[in-house]
Length: 566
Image 1 (tube, rainbow, N blue to C red):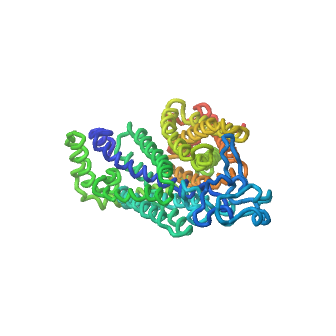
Image 2: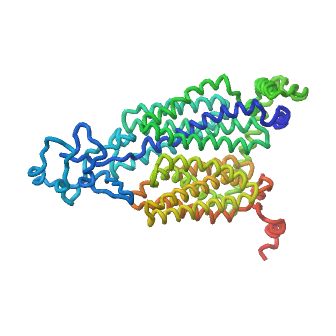
Image 3: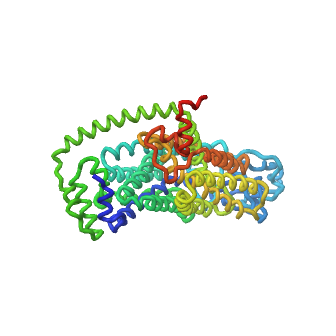
């Protein structure tokens, strides 16, 4: 059955599709929030060493007038002192006993301290923000890897869940697996908030990511499979807008609450309500038809037509009124077709591996996917390390994705895939490198310039990542297209797993993360111009067609000529 013909009749994006599409977008909002909540739950708050004989041992205060005498640190151009987190000046015991009475605290003169420093084993935290750092004393450089590991465990969970939910959705249906993934994300997210120790927290972070991994892909499938051909690009973009808003919302909640438990509960508890979708959101009609559930599909189509105010034609009604008497026969035929397809996939894959052109192209694609994921997530995570309000910086870095997705859609269809990918990566690379230079030599007065360049860099990588999905699919032969894009997406997760560790580089050399992002993006931008243009070109069905993408007819004839070696 040509389901697109049915959609043409009931409306490509009528009231029925609009309502269900908006319902599907809401879980994506919370899925995005869960995917980056660890930026603040496992973030590094302001803290300093506890100063004996000065700080109140029962109720110490983070900000004290004498702190710059007691703890080494830096004073910026505005006169704001930032203490080091794990060192303090050694106290002169003779001075203490001679001139400092211990009848009261908060009276610590400069002559109490020598110029020597030592490590501390107790800390005082800024009360405006509480994360797992304070909860379980994950302090100082020796423990920073534990915070980065939270992000890595998240992306490891994404890799695991992407495969699991994809298989389950094909077998048991889009809707039920979509709802289960949302509920699993919600329950494990609440588990993170209630975790009693670090080990339990990262276990729940991994499980939460498994649930999160099914939300966006299944929402995309449910949404796209129910809209007409001319509306699919638009619907995909709107889904991305909700994702960006969900990411940004985490920063707002963290800013308002200042407590990691509140943040985690705020993004994880509300999705429990989506259990009601079992009775509200319809199953994918395309999946029902593929599984020969014609009557169930027909009921949904009739309901959609009624809500859209459309009267179905007799030919469409007759199609859905067909009985399932031949279901067994159809299933056997489908099984045979599936077996033939599997054999065809193996043959095409072997042929593709022997093709030097496709293997070089695929190697460049792997580098581009890893780089895009690494830089895309790395910029989001590193945004909280920029000068200024870290919550605002983070939110802006997330919201810049909205114009990024829009520009990607426009650019792909105006200037082509190759130029869109190459220029956007070069833009990201150049702005990151310039931003790193300004960050290294500039002062507080140039914070706006660093943040602006950072945002442009995120805009560029958002455009390139969006283009890369479509571009990759258009360069891979039909039979192995799904497997090829899936393999590339899996490789990209390895780049995403490394991204949480990049902010650690900034602790040694502040501009180093931006330099790394810039160099990798710039190289990827150069390699993008080695790809053939695919705009308005026929999708390749065979290896030969994939090899010949971008070639003129004269080039193809010359390559296939038996005299080409002479």
